[in-house]
Amino acid sequence: MIRAFLFGARPSGSTASELILLAVRVFAGVALAVAHGLGKLPPREGFVQGVAKMGFPSPEVFAWMSGLAEFAGGLLLAVGLLVRPVALAIAFNMAVAGFVAHAPDPFRTREPALLFLALALVFVAIGGGRYSVDRRFR
Image (cartoon, rainbow, N blue to C red; front, side, top):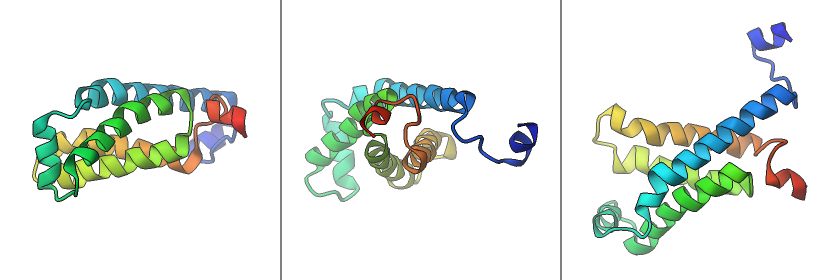
């Protein structure tokens, strides 16, 4: 166990690793939904204009999609429902935020989007884990 911890082997399916995955998933999902997504619904005019400046067609539709990816996607991530597709939508949204919308901004401004992108990619790769609603449907 110590050797696996020190040298990187993932203790597959251990209760401890599954509980940590649950904690990260719930925290990330709730934080994304409440701190970022809730304020984007319904999309304000300034946000819609920002989406238009990035070149997206139908900026109002894409602004809604962004807000829903963060709010509804965050809530679904937290409960562990449809984790991989939701995480993929979140990853796309965070990539646009981190590399397009905030590209000229200093790193500390882009950092939250990039952290959420990294977390979303983890959940795309490994799913929601043992303690997710998805597990009930497998």
